[in-house]
Length: 265
Image (cartoon, rainbow, N blue to C red):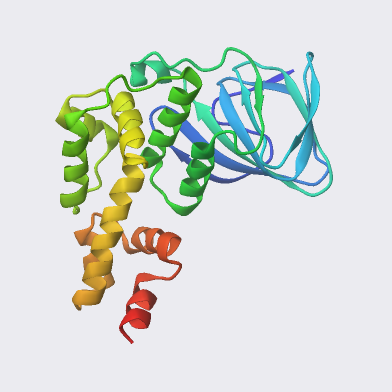
């Protein structure tokens, strides 16, 4: 039996992102692919986005269809038989030592687990973010949200004054993309707890909230100034024009330039 080293999957790798404790990857498999028994060095989540396959292990055999998600612990032995059209999997891999970086009691499941489609909406949001953006650090909040959900972590107080402070930073300091860790340092709160409490209070992750105000400011500049797209992107902390354009189109359906032309015409 083959054990695949960290970050490696069978199939064709389509896109990857990684930060200090996660690797995200999208892999494609040819139709009717048969993947022999193997395991992976690290634990990971795998979301099937297209196709279907039979998951076989010494303990079970089950049909996995598009939308289903599996958690496979490290060294879990399994075989996959794809049926019909090609398949595509979105993998979320936890690197060695990730627990020390989180520094909070958020354990992964101890055994293989299968989740039905849409059991965890935050992981579909993570997939969309992965496809639309190139910043792996903004993806961290969705994983924190999932870890808190499976650990049933709740915020213990209905009033956290630091949430208002974080919201104010995101609403007014628009020329910078604030990381979760940098915000946590400024309000002296653990980043996992901050991410969870902020979402419970505001109904959005910190990343979503931040992007909302940046794009609102961008709309104002597009309609009320003659600034270039590059200047507007820089004013809102985007590191390049393509990043800004992709983010804008994901929300408004058109590029900033076309938005300006259509609304002002």
